[in-house]
Image 1 (cartoon, chains in turn blue, purple, red, cyan):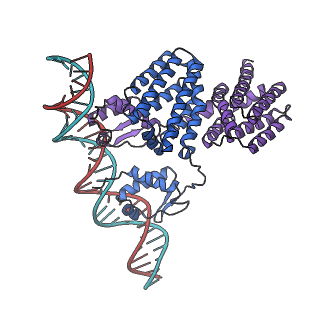
Image 2 (cartoon, protein in one colour; image 1 turned 90 degrees about the vertical axis):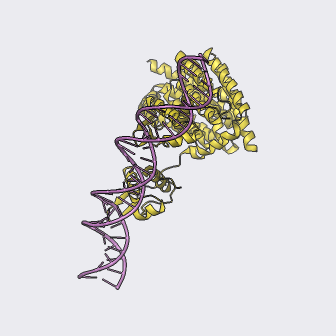
Image 3 (cartoon, rainbow over the protein chains, first blue to last red; image 1 turned 135 degrees about the horizontal axis):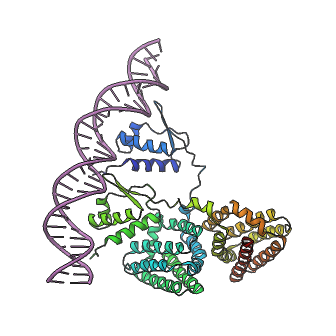
Length: 225
Length: 225
DNA sequence: TGAATTTGGTATATTATTGGTTTGTTATTA
DNA sequence: TAATAACAAACCAATAATATACCAAATTCA
């Protein structure tokens, strides 16, 4: 039983072929009727997808002639996140997050700390669910950065986080996030949060460093297997 | 035996997927029935979760069509370069550069240190020329990051530096970079470089902090005028 | 030259899919 | 035990995808 494909699925697929250079600049795509057969969709769907790609400026449709690629993938650099390696990401977090804690102590409002506590409470119920925990963990760190009130830092954190959203990371998550590790993370998160509550900038930073050291250890241990 | 998942669990998980960019702007989420199967919950629960995300503005539900992501984590990029203020930038540098120094000590090759010394020598001849000094200063910090061998950090540093291109920063430079300040910066740069040469990570980090503290002071003093 | 073929553009009836809704049951919690 | 929340199954109406046919302009080729 084959699934029906929506026009945005088709668009996404063609977009990928163009970005990766499978279809190069000025290439003519196969005729709509052929594409329909190749991609197992009706011609109408193909047309809608191509129409969207034209609006995005990726292709140009010429009547009675064909659809041509209008995108040069040499001009666009692959985002750095695609190729970032786990330990490189850890170094970035080591650089950032301890100081984020200091700034959070200086700037966080009571309501921010309340929200962080809420996320923390939720995390502590997810010892057995790696996926749910990881998502909450992301929220926790994003919220932490937000409390600094510095949009530049927030933006950088988002870039770092988008690395973690990558597919290869989901596998790594499966390997590292065992219940006992999650338990330890929860303890450390709680300690960091307490340090922020009691307005101890250096203590918060120090505890974040310990937390990251734990994370790095479980990472290197996992990649050794 | 699997636990029953509440609608807020589902909402949190989807929220995470959107924040980390696994579901991108304008993507259509899988149909409610599919989500129910994927996330091991009933359709009613999925519906409640989606309803909440819609209230948060993260997604838009379109009748008879689908649920679409209405959150673009790249949108945050635009305001950054327009509105990042010098003191916000200083906080970002405070977060980053001390740790960069540590990593540089661990990874810099002799030839890297030689190049850094070259830039440093050039800077010391530019005590009277604020513009030339500022350019070399940028080079120095970029080269420093490059010695870590971590492309992710390098990329982030580049983003931070690009903020310096905006107008308020240029004006601020005019105000702060007086010869006696440049002289002090040169001393501090030299000390940082020495600490890296002698492979003292914490000393290098500490001296970078002092340097940034000096820079911040002259910044606040300038904006007070 | 001139007819056949190929191309995107358009129209229409049919089928499958999707969110919205209702009803009743089963687990969980206070 | 009573109240709340998740589950399950069925149905509705709007929408999207399909299948098919035909058009007009460009290209190909006898």
